[in-house]
Image (tube, rainbow over all chains, first blue to last red; front, side, top):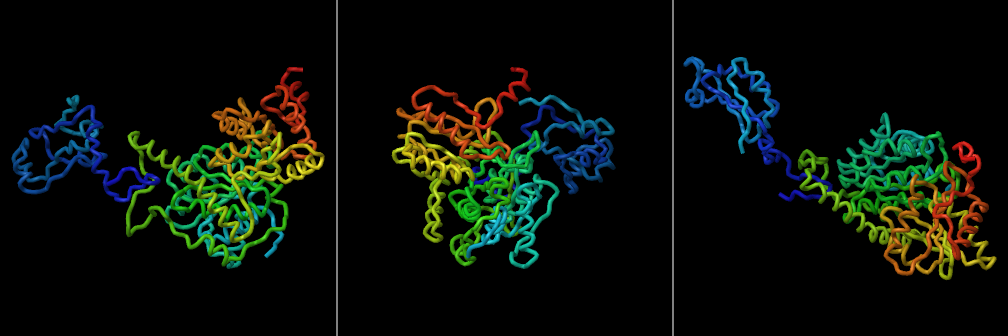
Length: 105
Length: 398
């Protein structure tokens, strides 16, 4: 797609996914699944949304959890392509399962 | 058909004849009559258009942008403070390359508050990326209003345009105007075809997007190219208009210039007074000429260089002031000559601010200084018809 158009028009919309905003990140959230109780608060609060929800059995089962019965619940994963590192998830997590570390590039 | 109309009606008739489909407008002296007349046309069923009453000029231009982006012909009108309030939105119209046409009742800017004529309002919008036309008469207001659509909508241009008519001298003065037939204007303008990407749910597109530093300059360069290309398009449209309607327009309109030592450069309604003044000087054998600047953006450098090159003194007579430098036309004209080896001496004359009459006395003072400038140094910027003593007293200098 041509980027330079007359009047800065974008004739093929829906392309903001091409802009990987994850490169903006200075700090990076990391979920420690052995602590994560799958409450989905981080998923609700993420403004991007860069926290993805997985409801399929395979992901639910294979992702570690602090207790076996929690594996029946949907599980989240951070989409680092778009996570800008705002830290809201880290701030909101009720069980401190999210660590916020300096990005190393 | 000959009609007796005011300048504001010229703009309204231009919009009606151009079959403008959307008119978002907010009233302001002296251009209020434009939306008033258009509402009347619509109410009488003479014009099929959407009139959008908005809460400010800022909203008027925003609505004009929205409508134009949808792909319809859009016109609006404002003046002075109203135009100033539109300022930031004007850049958006030109940056999005929307061919909106706007009538301006050229009026002074406050303070002190003043509703009368000068060109400060439009001159202050010089860098917004809009084309600028200045009418000498109500006929010119109408003709330029119609032509502005054809120029703005041309596939090679796609830039918005403003047409200035002098406050009261034109906006509220009744003059005989030759009103073209609807059919002839239809033939001249053709059906409105947006040569740009429009808002259309069937073909989604993003308009008014973000421009990162790595792309922004390219979009600005596009506007620069469009403004340069507009020069030729304006000539073509002026020529076609003359063929069809018999009235001649030129970006730079010269009269009595062939052997002229002194050439006066004017804009807008003051040109009529100046023409008669120059004609009388010619009768006295004085070699004085006149150049009317109809188009200020794009600035017709090439024509001005050619027409003015043999003059000894070019006297710029203008109704605007850039404090700390001089008149806007003087500034541009001087730099237009900067690369010429042999160039005329340019002298600036600030006249007629806030509706002060420009009379033969005014022009006499101009020519006196211009004649002096032929063989001695004179001030670069000369304020004419000003009670300087009173000002010096007020400023504590006397």
